[in-house]
Image (cartoon, rainbow, N blue to C red; front, side):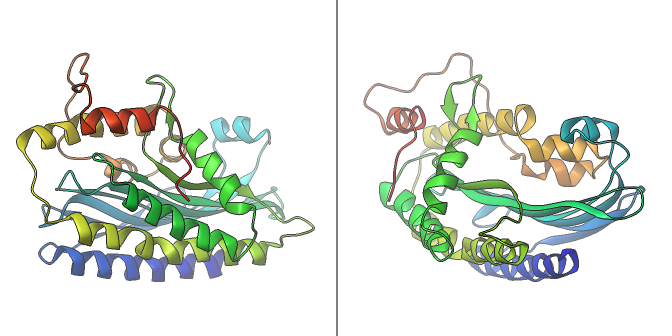
Length: 300
């Protein structure tokens, strides 16, 4: 399973980066191969200063070795080894009318000291963070997510949409990071879902990503915007940074397992503002976004 899924994310990285380069039309992804001293490594691809994308990363990694003490305590195990691989992406567009997007698809195995497989699971999802809210864009993104889920279980979309709303919540701000999507974790074999079934679901969601995001980019990338709208985008990016550094499990896992810091922090946008006690004008589009972020909404 681990070899099969690692091959899949290598192919998916190629597909996604090729399509995003075509959409941008100017910038190319810079590839960076890296190794982890304790075992494994990865292939990072970063795009910067493009016509459409200000910064983005589409990274894959496969790391293995002894599970660090902090993670042993987290999982409630002792003297375990692990293998983890995944694809993680974050795209920050130039135009504030185009939303930031994040996605992640990952697989994890744990072994005892004799090398026996004792646990395995899939996790992942994809979510959208707009700066200006176009309802039809949110509806499109969620419709694609739901269609991917419905092919495998009619309850998956409702369940994983709710988990996404719960996970991407900035508790210290009491607001959502964005308008959500899907989030699932610890997807293990059950009587109704084998690991092969979970693999098929995981890859279904992965394959749906470009369909969910690219039409929105192409619709909004040439929209006119003002300096004030750009400032708002940078203020909201600050909330994005706060979530990733304070709450995100993937960031924390990477830091605790001696991951590559450049790859872990590639999700951070290049231009961000923190304005003291900032409040948008009453009745503005900026205020409308905040009202939606204060209470998760059903989009489909």
